[in-house]
Length: 258
Length: 236
Image 1: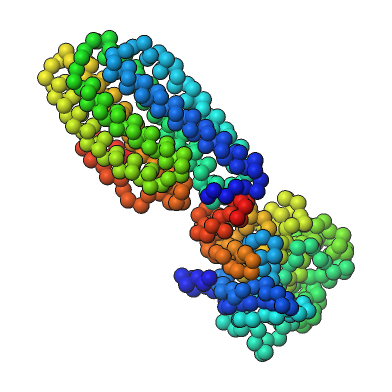
Image 2: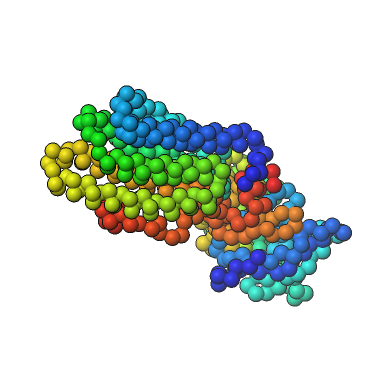
């Protein structure tokens, strides 16, 4: 499902198929995702939404027996072409996972890790700057600035997730993918992350997989509904949640037996 | 949508709201019909009951609002569910207003009955009232069955009511102009006619809500208005 009215397309998926061995998980997805928007991918378990998310930074490459067909372009460049450096791609397309997964290192080193391996900071002062800026953008700086040497794992769940967001944005990505980033968090920590996403979309394109319909409705500008490996409906979030065009979408968002 | 919710108590919540709208609708119809009967038959015996009965409509509307707030807060409804709750609240508010008009008709009928007049205006009023009662019944049926087409028929019939009202309005003004002793009663007839016409307008609002609930948008076209009496400022 393409969106011809919008000129601000960041990610363009065309006829994307994914096989896990013989099983086909995605059946030819066409989807445009806009820059500086949050797009929510929703659908029941096994619908293919996380599989689709992982196509955007080629995380499916690391899964045995997984084959991806079709094209995914970022800024008109097909990320599945041979010319693409996957490590560099994953710096441009950051990812935040369901369970906060800080490295067993200090808060500082968690954030500094990416810039270091990508050679983005020439000296300590520049690195300090990147760490501070990233933690500030992730809304964590004020809470951790006096204990940057403390272990990342000593933080609360919500703080850990914001640390992971800081780590993802430290390498200055264009896109941030989030796979159920709040499902392990309490409502307050969730609200903090949601507020943060609203901030972050000014600079980044955000794609989030969520099982919470309310979360999708609250935070996204566009919503895509997946079912059994197909993209059923994609459109402006307010339209999807007030007047979906498809009966399957209606049944899913209303909690009905479809 | 005939599909049931996975959480079946959500279905029961929505059914409760529908039942409250149905009770409000039934009561509003009954109050309106009783007020018109009292006038037609010059029977003052039911008037106190009609006036007292209005508070039941007020209470039912309040009950429905309370339930709707609970359902919104606890279920976080989406799409058709959300629209149906919003429609129920708006329709309840309209039906409560219909009750107010019925009460006012009853009060004015009481004055007319006491004057012991037997005038042909009653026949014209009864004719408009009959059409509006039919519209109200049809709008409530359309709500009960979720039938947007049936609702739109109601919407269109309001034109006939407006035409009849305009005609009756002119006649009554002529009576008032011709004889001072009839002026007081005529003014009550005039207000009753206006009340019935307003119930017609409110009935079209019910029809619009049914359309909205089914389609997710309001009817696209302006409803035809021929109410030359009130002018363009008074549109329902």
